[in-house]
Image 1 (cartoon, one colour):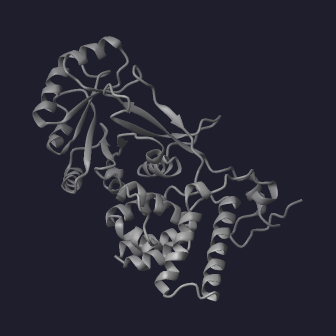
Image 2 (image 1 turned 120 degrees about the vertical axis):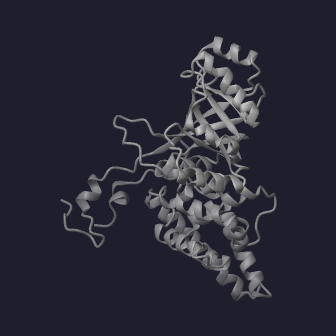
Image 3 (image 1 turned 90 degrees about the vertical axis):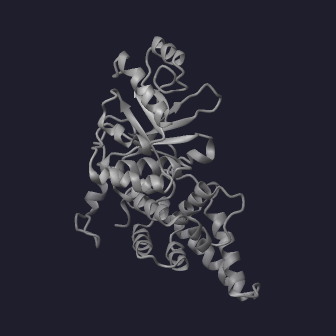
Length: 369
């Protein structure tokens, strides 16, 4: 019978046997259409994986972090399709956190739901991000007297809630959007008559179950980050450490390097990959990098044996390759050595090189006795 003595980490073997597997996060996407083949945009929403018992939704901004990490990194949403503008709900807590910094204007729009209060802190944050080129969408507008319309000069999209707004409110809301130069989206469409009525009024963008219900996706998760390395890198980035110091800290965790290289492609959209991890980090805007490190700290929880074995294998290959290059005197300078080592690291840390996890045995899940 397994011993119930606590391990060095304070966790008993019995607790390991009985511990549930981490909950599986996936996401939903719903298209914003304009009549073209590709959607104008996609609204992303958080989901737990379906099951007999669904855990409660994590508090924001944790749920937003999980959504962004799952959709953009694990799911590779941008790399796999052309989604257009991404609309991501952020309540006041997420808006005021570093999570909001990751949704740059080129990537998507921060969607402000009905429960975001119009107060000094939220208005100031919206103004600061708007000045840096971020886009905003007001969701759930059902009345021309909605207090959030005070933010209209800083908003790019206005979503008319067709299911809640009375018919006599549609024209005033459309007029407000037109006067402010804001794109109007008819949201929560369920009735064909409403679609035809709004189309006759000149509305161009539509979203709702009538045109396409939310589609749920559950992509395979990338190997999990080393939380100690992640915490160290987050601390250094917030202190303004130089990029070579950040690269040295990040290189200790291959799973983190995978994500940093994906973020470089996501934001820089370059055909030529970076020549070094230092260059990749230097190319990312500082606030975006800090925001993503904050996201990853709250969205990385799969510490499976597969994750640890993959990371260890990558580290061993890098160590052996570096030793062979040095032993063979194949590089004329330290810079050339680091460039060759990084090129191998980059190829090992591409999404395509990560093998799918195998089902762990009971002994692998429990660890050594």
